Structures are given as structure tokens and as C-alpha cells.
Length: 173
Image 1 (spheres, helix red, strand yellow):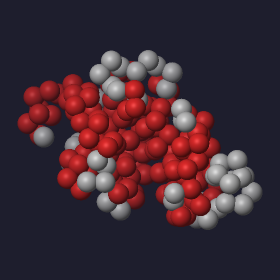
Image 2 (cartoon, one colour):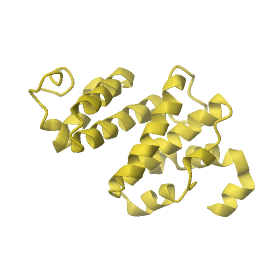
Image 3 (cartoon, rainbow, N blue to C red):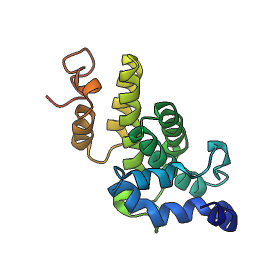
Image 4 (tube, helix red, strand yellow):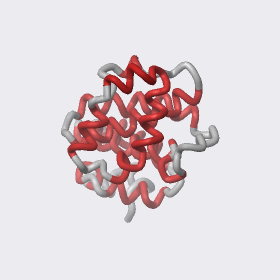
């Protein structure tokens, strides 16, 4: 990967995401795919963010990488990448999807998933207010809120909040 990063420079993130987006989404449970995405760019600050299109692809990469860190139980790294993905991506949610990004890999779905994982991270840390904030944010940006509700309920630390104040409109009954 370092050779491709050096050769493509600022275009690497866009090329990587447009090439690997489907495997990153569909095989995110595979340790080899996780290692691939977590091995890219040591520091978040190195990602290209000068233009809206660079921020779009960087946000996608960070969301994929945050998910991989989560699955590898690197929760600090996951939180850092997911928060940065949300920060970069949310202002771009109304932007048309670039032609080389498949509809089911578009930024709104990845930002919703980032919020779901951040809700689970905060719930595990007993920060109910932040967990609820991220759960609501996931629902707000999701194209399919019922799928997000089901995803939220799939995390035991979030499902345990069913019946608590504020969670009735977030978790499925």
C-alpha cells in the first residue's frame, strides 16, 4: 500500500475507496479486510481534505476504518476515526454522490453507521447522554431509520437502555 499511496498522492484515498468500498462494506468481518483498511494512513491528519470531494472520500475511508478498528476491539482508534468521519461527512450529506460511489456505499449510510458505533462506544463507557445523542443522529441521517433502529438494538449495551427515558423513540419496541 505505501507504494500506491506514494504514487497516487492525494488521489489515493479516492481510488482506494472507489475500488475497495464494496469489499470493505460486505466483508467487514474478515480480519484481512480489517487489516487492509487499518493499515492505511497512520495519522488522520494526513488525509486529503482540501476539497469537498476529498472530504467525501476521506469521510468514507474513516468510517470504514473506524468500523474495522471497532471489530478489532481498538475502541479508542475506532472512536477517533468515527468522530472524524462524522465531522468531515455530515456537512457533505446533501452533496450528490460521486459517480464512482455505489448507491449502497454512499456517505449518508456510512455516517449513520458511524453514529451507531459511537452510540455503542459511549454506552459501553456509561455515557448515556452521548450514546442517545449519537443514536438520534444516526436516525436523522439514515435513509432507512428502521434498519438503524434494528442495528442499535443489536448492541447489548444499547438494547439494555430499552424503556429508559429518551430511548423509546430510538430503539424498536
